[in-house]
Image 1 (cartoon, rainbow, N blue to C red):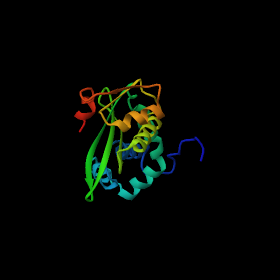
Image 2: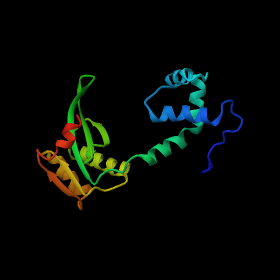
Image 3: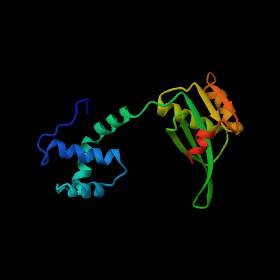
Image 4: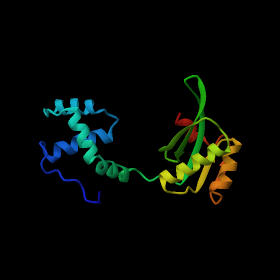
Length: 170
């Protein structure tokens, strides 16, 4: 499959209806049936199966466009972890937030060690495709060890009071 965008030719509905259905599905956390109901409120009778097929065919275009419109992450990242229980087992939810409060990434880990922190740093840099100017963490020592290995040129601030941005995003 090449870079050419898929053709809307030969479809029952006009381009506006198809694009609106696909946009609704990819922009908001809706199911195919919920998109079907929203379109029914607008007077357009379309089945959820049709919405599913159109999202499969045209969805990548809309997902790429929405991803391009996302704000660029700030250059100061705040990292934090929270203890959670999933099916009775304790897990660690690692979060990264930029200085504007935008959530950069969330990862659930079994452990809270240096390997988990390195995995989170690498995943975060790959997802955002940027390297921060500064990283602010709490006093967890594994963040410091992972920071020295993964991104040694980045400034690391480890202080309890500085990480309020990540703490507020609970």
